[in-house]
Structure formats: structure tokens, C-alpha cells
Length: 458
Image 1 (cartoon, rainbow, N blue to C red):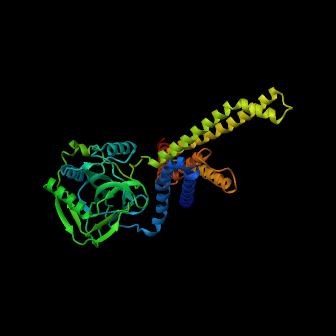
Image 2 (cartoon, one colour):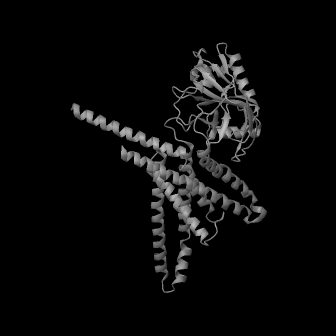
Image 3 (tube, rainbow, N blue to C red):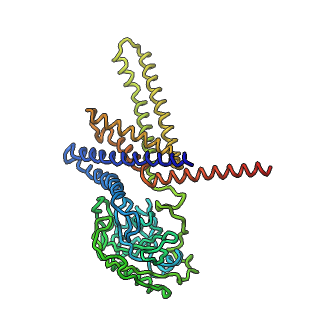
């Protein structure tokens, strides 16, 4: 047990070092992209879009993830958090009842359950936003409470996807009580999206929130009470101090501090299966917000980037193979004593050696990607080590007067290495690999116990 605890602590330290190095590498990549944007005048300024994407979606989220560990409390303060740890929307509604009763009550009140975040739902949202079409089940960004993402979200469109009412729900931990000792089964955070804009903290595209969050809170409670005769509401006055602040996107918010407790425990659920918004099976949710056993998006992204790295290596091998005649001429020019046959043999030998080494590297890297996909932590460490070595090598070469890193040379390859580092060093990727490791150990222990039981009865 002590050895396993030491190994887990050492793994956490190594993961933290990769996390910090990935953040520094993202900063350097942002610098390189910025210099590349202005290197060739106005013709290259379109590359500023790439710079914005690197800063907004890679660098700033990592910086906030590190800083918020020190200054944002890790206990209930009536606020949800963003993935980066920034304070998000106020938690302004409490509920009593089961998940099925909440689904039934929200459906009867005219709310639509939002789709889960994913590539398909994101593309549908973009299409609906551009074409101004309705998408009543559009996904809602992730916020965290009790250390985990919302279990589900409901919304109502207000004309289009840029304006909507929405409310996120989290199940309270077993035995947990609100400050003051009041019992609640669920907590919820409801706000109104008024437009789409840029986040003040990360510069990412996001929904802008209406300042008066109490109006949305009261609207949620009113629709639940009007749509369900059996719903009962009580309000804890001045549950928290009224305040004016900003949410995770930098939008101004205000609240009077009252907390309504909505009791849906009397809502019948006999027809819940017939409701279109409740036809999704409830699944256990882990702290990452993904279904237990499901891979987080960062694992898919990391494996995809590694596959693209392999594809680029294969293209490089093909290019080298096609340049064989030019290599023969170069060898003859360097050494006039070689016959054409000797030059051809030597160039073929060099090419065969190169392709062999490259083939072994591709096979090893592909095997790592496969093992990472299945949650092997050592493979994740190996892939991050390879990317770290590549980034360090490029940095040393760059700072010691080597060739410039440009879009035409090795900026794309360096970007792949930085992205692999960021994807695989994140909290969700680390937690997934750790969980899969525990599952494999438990499976081996179970099989060992079964074999011992069979041997004892034989």
C-alpha cells in the first residue's frame, strides 16, 4: 500500500511538472505565432486569428487554472466555477426531489433539456447561430460545483440561440446540508443569456449573461410552480449577502441573496418515459462531467493529434523516398571517386536506414496513441516526454541562433507537440488514466480471487 501511495504521489508530481511545462510551451507558441503574424507585413495578418486562438483556448485557460488554485476557495460559497476555476454564475435555486421528478417538472413547465457538449452539438449550435435558426436543445457550457460538472441543463430559447433562459443542476453530496442546516437534494444556477461575445478573462467566444440574475431565478421558480400544481416553494431570505460581482466570462451580475427551495417531491413521474426531453437514460457522472467509463474530449484530441503527427511523418518518408535521384547526384558530387553504382547503393542504404528508423518510431508512437486511448498512464507519460523533448530541442536550437521557426519550416510540427502536451497533461486526461488504472487493478484482483476460489474447490 505504501509503495502504491508513493507511486501515486510521484505520478502527481510528474503530472504537475508536465502541466506547468505545457503552460510555458503554450506561452512560447503564442509568442512565435505573434511574431509570425507580423513577419511578412499585412499579407500575414490573417495569422492573428491563429494567435487569438492560441491565447484564448490554450494559454489563458492554463494560466487561470494555475492561479485559481491559490485564491479561489474549494468549498461551497454559492457560486459555480468554470473549468479554469474562475467564479461563475450564482447558485440561486435549491430543490428537493429525485432526478426523474426534476425532469418531469421542468418538462411540464415548458423547458427543454440541453444536449450534451460534443462535436455534433457544437456544429449544430454554430449552424443555428449563423442561420438564425432555432435549436431548443442547444448545449450549455460546463460549470462546476461540488468538484463536478452539472449533471444536466434545461433551457428555453428567446428567439434564437444567442438569447435563452437556462439553468444547470447539480446533485448534492450524500448527507450534505446548506449553510444553516437546511436540507436540499439538488442545487441549480439559472441565468439569462442576452448575446454572444468574448469572455473578459479568456477571450473565448461565449454567451453574455444578463446582470439581474434574480429575475431569471424568479422566472425559473414561477414556471415550475405554474406548470406543476404539486410544487411547493419556500424561500430563505438573505441566504447570502446581496452582492454585485462578475461571472467567469467577466459579465456583471447582481443578486439580493435570497434562495428559493423548490420541492418537486410530489410531482408524479409515471409518464416521464413518454416525455421527449427525458428519454435520455441517467448515467453516473464522474467529476469531469463525463459518463463513468467514457473518455474525456482531451483524450480524443490527444490521440487525434498523435495520429496527425504519424501522418506527417509518413508524408516525410514519402518525400524522402521520391528525392532518391537527387540524393544520388549529391553523393556523386561530394565524392568523385564513387561510381554511379556505388553512389546509388550508398544513397539506397541511407534511405533504407532512414525509413527503418522512421518506421520504428511511427510504430512506437502509434502504439503509444493506442495505449493512451485505453487509459495506460505510462504511455501518456511517454508521449508527453517525447513532445517535451521536441519542444526543448526546438527552443534550445532557437535561442542558440538556429534557424527561425516559421510557418514554412517547423512551426506546425512544434504546434502539434505543444497541443499534445496540453491535451494529455490536463486534469481530465490524468483522472481518466488514473481511473482506468484502478479499474484494471481491480479486474486483475477479481480474476486472481476467482482462480484461487476455483483452486480451492478443485
